[in-house]
Image (cartoon, rainbow, N blue to C red; front, side, top):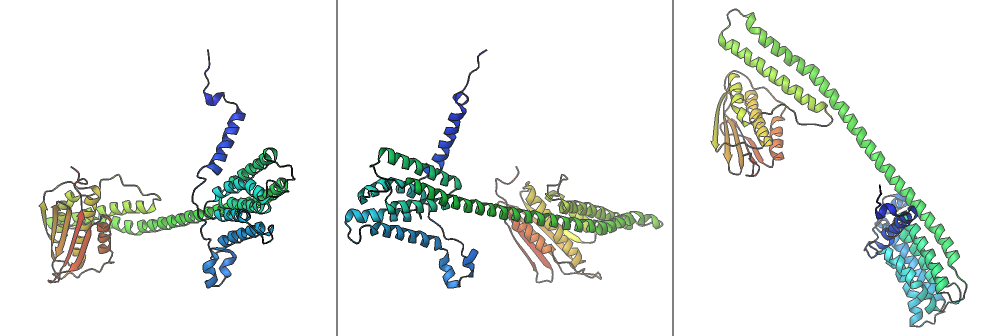
Length: 437
């Protein structure tokens, strides 16, 4: 039996290690080397700058830019110092080029690194230095500044690659471009290693601080969610213990009440039956809602939700409670999305409940209009009549209806009418694609 090997598996571990290393070099110093990355303002409201006066603090965010510009000026003065005030075109160019490269780190940091390496032998040759090859004094200072600024603006791995590339460049320049003079490469590499190590330590520490802060924020949010869930569970438990108990008592008493009266009239039996059915339905709905309150992650209930097809049952229910209701449906009846059907049913249910509470004895009208662009609802009632007094409510019914309509992108109005009644109108848009065929 022969075993075939792919090119990837046949390569030695050393080759793969070199390949990974070169891939890291390409990612850090060659990928998007010409990318435009302007240095942003720093946060002047943190650190020592927060103690500065307001007028000065506005400009404190430009402090890193000012430091780089000051370093560029020092590099330029170092280049000019050798000429003792007598300078030609080439001398001015050798003084200006390294300073300009330092300024380039503000917008294109990786490009500035390569420019500093590439111009170093030309600056040294044009400046006529007899010692320090391949580094002139100003190009050496400029390269150190470039290394520090680029390392501060990139990742720690980039600092290591820059030092290695600089060391390779120094070796190449001395061996192949050497002019038989002493070199400043070893001292420069030593100082660069110390500077890059310092910048890397600060970067790692700053990154660790950010990660700890982010983790603390996530922990605080999780703690807040857990506390909220515990509070919701406590509220749900109390609601269940109080409301569910009383609703169960109402259902049981309504079922037993006809048997306590000898020969009860059918109307009384029907009234108690309606009370019991409403109590059981309310208890079921209450337990479902409390389950949602207790749950950390809400999931849609498995039980079918009411739709507009159940409006007839709802109307009969309120009619048995003594409310005169007239229902009218216009337009081509069609099945709408589940969210629209449920919200429309709840709106009608809440509006009729408001009529029972706030306008007992009044007649109500329910109009459902299936139009081309959506669904229209209108629930209107006249003034209260009879001896039953209106029951005050908590005032959240209208708000809940409005929230449902707004969630579906519709519009709603709720206002008193001229005859002393009340009217609720709502329109929910439904496109042709959303309609269930």
